[in-house]
Image 1 (cartoon, rainbow over the protein chains, first blue to last red):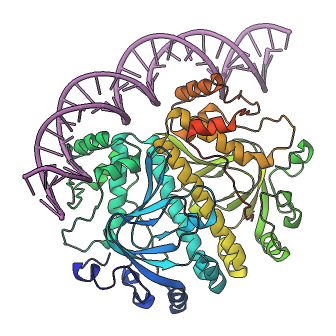
Image 2 (cartoon, rainbow over the protein chains, first blue to last red; image 1 turned 180 degrees about the vertical axis):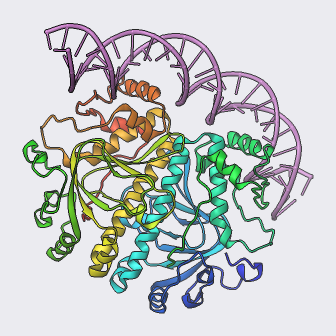
Image 3 (cartoon, each protein chain N blue to C red; image 1 turned 135 degrees about the horizontal axis):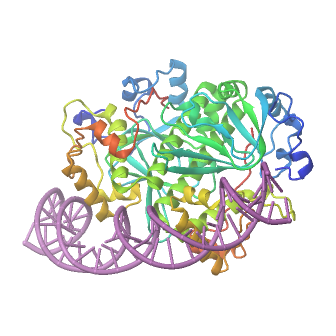
Length: 262
Length: 262
DNA sequence: CGATGTATTGACCAGCTTCAAGTAACGTGG
DNA sequence: CCACGTTACTTGAAGCTGGTCAATACATCG
C-alpha cells in the first residue's frame, strides 16, 4: 500500500476506472522488494492492463467456481485466497498483498477453484484472461516473470501446508504471524500506527485449520509469553522475532529477494 | 508409465544416459491425457533435455535446501514432494506422477524449498536450471505451458491444504485415495494387476497430517464400510467412487482436461 | 439506544496422538 | 531349509490437544 492515507482512498473514481495509474508511474515499482523492469516491459504491461478496480473490505475479487474470472495484480490493500467445503468449512490458502498476482489457477485448471476476498479497501489492476498468453507471446521475459510469480505462490502454499499439517497450534500461530509480518513490512509506512493486520481471529483460525476458540487461547498464550501484542484493529507487534521463530520451528531470518511485478 | 515390464526396467543404462528417449517418440505423448504438441515444440524440448535419469525407489531427485538442483519431467514411476521441520516431522505436499514437472519452486525462490523422493523405480527427463528461461525465449507457447503446469500444481496443493486444514480423518483418507485413483488411472495398463499404489501407510499419514496409527484405523473403517480394498503392495480398489466422494465431501466426478507436457 | 460482529472465558468432551506390544511378510545368511 | 533382522501393519489402552457449546463482555454503528 502506498501508505499515505490521503491518496489511498480517493473517493473520486471508486469502481472501475479505465484510466488508473499509468504503469510507468506505478507506486509499487519504487519499492525495492520489486525487481526493476525495463521500459519495454512496462509498456507491454500497461497495454494489457484493462482497468483498475477499487474495492472495499469484504468484496469478492474472484468467486469459487468462476472459471473465467479476470486476472489481477494487487496494487494496494489486503485480500486472501480461500476454498470451502460444501458444508461451509473454509480454508484460507494464502494472503494476498500488494504485488501479488491472482487468478492464474482459475485460468489453467477446470478443477475446483478458489475464491479471493478482500480484507481492506484498496485497488487492483485488472487484466483479461488471455493476457497471459499475449504476454508470453509479446515478451518472453514477462512470461518468465509470470512463471516465477506462480512458483513463488506455490512455495508459500507449500509452507502453509507444512504448517497446517505438522505444526502444533502455538507453532502455527507463531509461524503465521511471523510470515505476515515479513511480507507486510515493505508496505508499511515507517511510523504510521495504522492497523495493518486487518484480520479477525476467525481469519487466523481459518488459515491455520484451528477453531476460533482455540486460536484465541493460543494467541493469549503468546501474549503472556511476551511474544506478541495484537488487539483488534491495532498494529501487530512482535517484540522478539527470533524467539517467535524458535517457537514456530521456522528458520529465521527469512530473506525474500526481489520479485517481478506485473 | 509404459507399463510393459520388459522395457520398463532395462538394466542396460541404469544411471544417467545422455541418450534416452527421443522426445518425438515419447511414450507419454501417446496418452490422451496430454495435449498434443507441435513438432517444433517437441524439437525445442528435445534440445533442452539434458539427459535421462533412471532411479530406484527411495532415491532423492531433489533435496530440501538444494537451491540449484536440476529440473525434471517425470517420465515413468512415482515420487512425492515433501518438506520437513527441523525436528523431523514431514509433510508430503503432493505426489508426482508421469508428466509432472518438478523443480520450479526451487529455482524461483530462495525461500525454504522442498525435497522430492521416489516411490518406485522409474525415470525422469532432466533439464538444466536455465532451461526455463531459454524455453520462454525460444518458444513462447512452451513458456505458456510451463506457467500452466505450475498453476496446476498450485491447484493440487491448494486442494491438499483444504483437505489437511478442514477435513476430518475419514474425509482426508477418502479424498486422498480418490484423487490418487483419478490421477493414476491414465498410466495403469488395463488389466495388469500390478501394485500401482506404491505407498506405505506412513506416506498416507504424512500426506494427511495424521498419525500412522490413526491412519491405519481410518483405512480400516473405510474397508469395513466396503469403500476401499487395499493391502500392502496390492492394487488399490475403490468399489464405490461416488460413495467415497460423498464421504470425502469431494465433488465428483472430477475431470482433468488435457495437460501440456514438457 | 439496541443491533450486530468480535473477543474472551469456562466447562465438557472427542478425535486424534502416543506408547506399547504383537503379528505378518519378506529377504538374508548360515 | 530355518533362524533372524527388518519393515510394515494391527490392535489396545491412556491421555492430551484441540473442538464444541454456551454465556458474557466489548466494541462499533446505525
